[in-house]
Length: 232
Image (cartoon, rainbow, N blue to C red):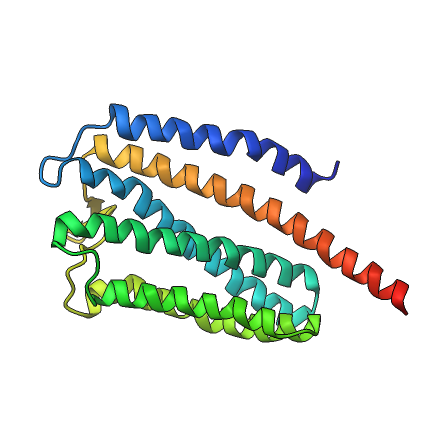
C-alpha cells in the first residue's frame, strides 16, 4: 500500500470521527447564542464550509499554474478533484447561508455583494466542469480547465473583501475583529473554540476527499491510457 492509500485509510476513520465529535460539541455542549438563538449554530457549518471552499479553489489555482508550467497530468488531476470538492462546499455555503439568512434577514436570498460574488464563484466552477466535459482531448481539457481555474480563483479575494468594499447586509469577519490596532476574537471563547474545531474537522474531511478522488482519477486515466494502447 502506497503512502497516499495509507493516509486515505487513516483519514477515512479519523475525519468522520472528528466531524461527529465536533457535532456533539456544537449541538449538545456549546451554549446557544443570546441574540440569534439556535439558528446561530448554522455558523459551525457555514464558516468551515467557506474555509474549505477557499482552500479547495486555491489548490485548483496553484496546481493549474503547475500544470501549465510542467504539463504533468498529475497536477491537473489534483486541480480537478479539488475543484469538485470546492464546488460541493461552495454549494453548502450558499445553502447554509440561505437557511441562516431566512430568520436573520427575513428572506432566503438578497442580491447582497457577498452572496452575489459567491454565486458567481459557484457558476464559474460549474462552467469549469462543463468545459471539461465538452473537450475530448485530455491535454486540451487540462490546459483549458487550468486557465479557467486560475481565472475563477481571482473571484475569491473579491468575495472575501466584499463586506469591506460595498455596503452589505452580511456581517464582517466572524473570527476576529480589529480593535485599537490589534486583532481580537469576535466572539467569546465558548463559541470560538468549537468553531475552530469544526474548521479543523472540515479540513480533515477535505483532505480525505482529495486523496480519495485523486486516486480514483489517477486509476481512471491509467485505464484510458491502457485502452488507447490496446486500440493502437
